[in-house]
Image (cartoon, rainbow, N blue to C red; front, side, top):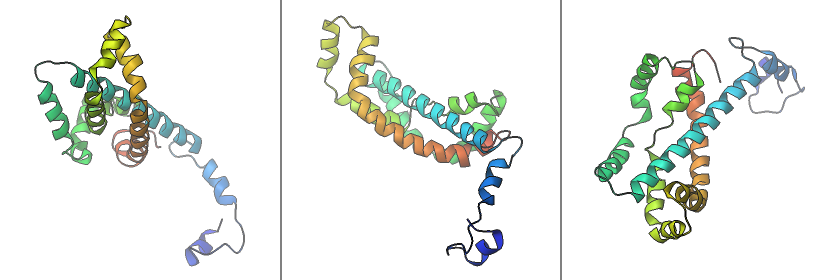
Length: 193
């Protein structure tokens, strides 16, 4: 609500005269042809797309690893835990190179695919939850005529809804920061958000 000179002189104080032209300017300024509503749209598409995919993939992966016995199951869990030791910023150059090689730079789908890993924090939460659910739920669903697919979607997803909400809110906040500051600037330079 202040003009630039007054803002620099009295940063925390109330304005002597309310100045609304800054808001008009903010909505009229265009960066590389994108106005503020386009920037908000970019952020929302990225954050919602990445959040949705990053909830679906770990849920499916966690269910399979927790409920089915197969060779390498414990190794997959160990890899998931170990992968959380590597900071995301430490893998940024390799991620950029991979996206460049696959021609996914400046595309929404590239960023959404990169956030769709089935491992990580969400996987560990979902895996632990599915391991704690009694097998009698699945057996009851089987007796009712449900196959594995229907058991997963109807029985298990209804039980895990609260965990998904928690995971979704956590990832949404994290992705909002990551998409706007680090990842988008490094991989989506043609379209600011």
